[in-house]
Image 1 (tube, one colour):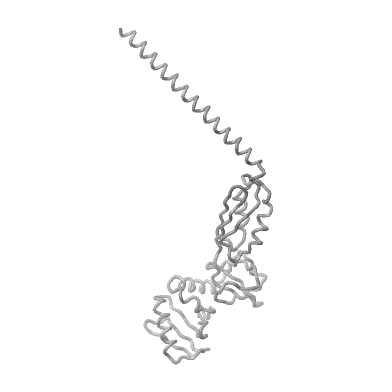
Image 2 (cartoon, rainbow, N blue to C red):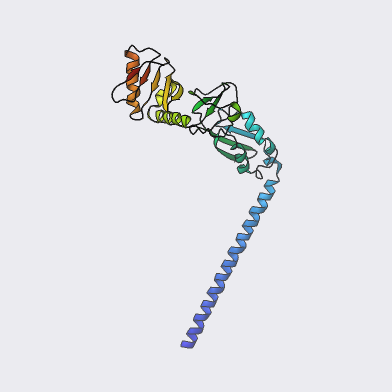
Length: 261
């Protein structure tokens, strides 16, 4: 009985192993079939003329003209949408200093949608020749695509010629970095005041602000900037202060008025 039982048990185990092997082989064959089907379908669609790129849509670009973006993607027109490298297009557009990020999506049957996030201008720097160049909050020079300045930004001076101000490069200036730090602090703590600023400049490492509304010059402090500017607003509205005065806001609970120079 024991011998017969062992033979029966071994036979059942052998059949189970054979059955498992069949299922594994069957699964592998199905997987190969699906892979081949997918590959063949992709090859077929990649050669189909109705998937050739005919239309490109742009969104998110405000400073960068559509015509410039269209020139970048023009070589891809007429190519099969499935063969086009979206990473390649994104990489080409990302070379523009104004571009912070770009996303390229295929839209069947024959179009692309390109969404751009631009770097925002923070200031204009004025060159030795008197021309204005937009920069971002890190001091990187941004592309200017028109002689019309569409961004309403404060201005500061840099002792650099036009030839030194190349888009995509960062201006290395301790004075400019102090100004940018002040601008970032205002943007963070009192953003409503930003439209009132027409110009920044420095004297002896001290940052000055010119109020676009009245020409007054301010020296902001580093602490509690909202309270400082609130006190300035009160003095400006209620005090008899000449436009040539300098208002020093660095002192606690007071505004010190200095004779202009």
